Image 1 (tube, rainbow, N blue to C red):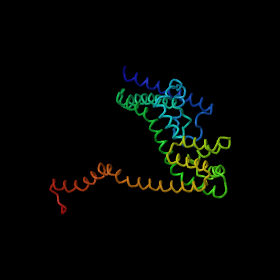
Image 2 (cartoon, one colour):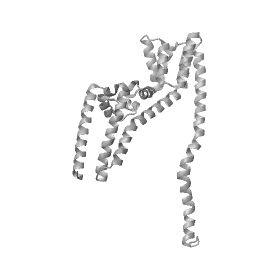
Image 3 (cartoon, rainbow, N blue to C red):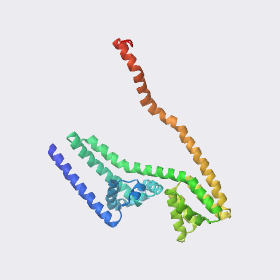
Length: 300
């Protein structure tokens, strides 16, 4: 096969891919399943390309329905739950998304090697394929980390609002409504909104709070929920428990901030030794060494 055949094949594959993505986009948009608002896309941390790839993954997801019961599937389900389950993605859909991204990466590697290197390059094709396979999982880990950090940072402020509301005479359900209405938008406020809706619809407050702790899966949040449940069972004042928990969360957040600040010099050591120190030596020593070798002096 000559170069013209490779280019023709790449052009045909590109045309078919564009046609397929356009079709899936129109179908998903007509069904209302494509994340249509910019806010939803921002919350999910997804690009338009990733959304269209997810539509393909949902078509072939039934082929991997059994992956949910495997250890890998259970670990992946926990990550999806902690990330807020972006785009309502299930475990089979996410697994198939990695397959689809891998195929797209192989195609992009082939296309790039044909256009740039004037011929297929196995190394470049494999590189793009491996990148496509690992990118969704890496992105999911980033979503989990970002969501956990935001919840941990917002928790003291939410506890303060709950404390003030309960001490002002509101019951805990009304205090949650106040937090949901007046709190800053974020994943923690969204979780409290879900709890308030569940309680309003008839679910017990204990079960709703346990469900929130299960979805967030953060040790600090689990401790907060258990303290509330225990206070309700023992008849202890919820306002006092909330104030104690808020003080503890604030102290822990300050300690964590100090710990992270203390790690900064250690993390700077590697770039300092690899980039800054060699550059400084080159600037400081190159001039005198060059002048010594060439026999020049400052007077010249």
